[in-house]
Structures are given as C-alpha cells and as structure tokens.
Image (cartoon, rainbow, N blue to C red; front, side):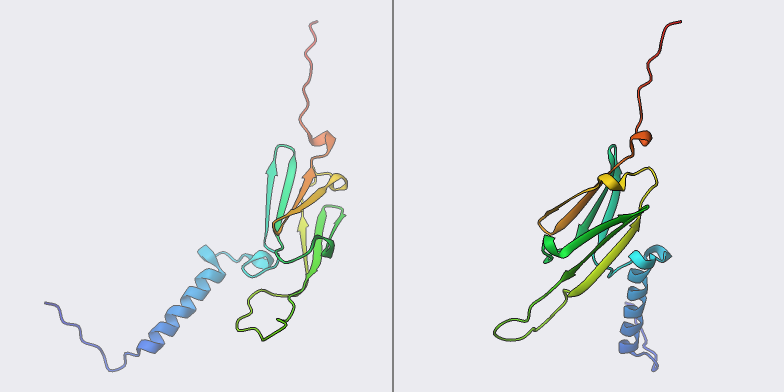
Length: 148
C-alpha cells in the first residue's frame, strides 16, 4: 500500500485557483494561438467558407429581427451591423443574463475574386446567410479546341 504525505504548505484552494487560471488561458488561446479579434466572445460568431460559386458567410444572430440588420459592402470589406434588444421581464427581474444586448458590428475582408455587388442575404432560424458570387472573370471557362 502506498502512502502519501502532504506537506504542510499544501493549499487545495490555491491548487484549484491555479488550475482554473490555466484552463482559462487554454480556452482563451487554444493551442497557444492568439485568435485576435475573432476569438471567443465576439458577437456575432461567424463562419466563412468557399464553395464552387463563391463565398458563403454565416452569422449567428438569434433574437435579432431581420429589419434590425444592415449589410454594407465596400471594396473587399463586408460589414454586418445591427441591434439586439433584450427586454426586461414584465413581472420580475433577471436571475441570470448571459445573452448580450445592444449594437453590434462585424467587418470581414473577403477575397478579391468576389463580386460584392451581387451579394444576396437570407435569414432563417437566427442564422444570417450572405452569399457572395465570384466575379465572372474569376469563374473557370471552357475553351473550345479547334482543329487546324
């Protein structure tokens, strides 16, 4: 049977606090990478991916009415801004409030081969989807082969 001796300087609370600080550091910078302005806690969270027709931007904006969202395109920059309001309960008060309220804005730099002038947006189940097609000159073309 193994016996463990605890030193007189052992403080379990300090050990737990050190563990909590280390976990917070890991979650703030996963894999030691600084995520910068798109790190944890930025609202609205966004996913950007490319498909064969262009680029798709998906933003999570639950509780935001579509008429409270503005989308602007300038150069290569797509900016989505809006306002989310969380009304105070009519009878009572908040016990816990984790969903933020107020103005928000996200600006994204998109690739140069996209045509922001033809972008289209849709909103469903709290997800705002912006589709930006490729410029015509950036799309692959078939070239006919002529017999000589």
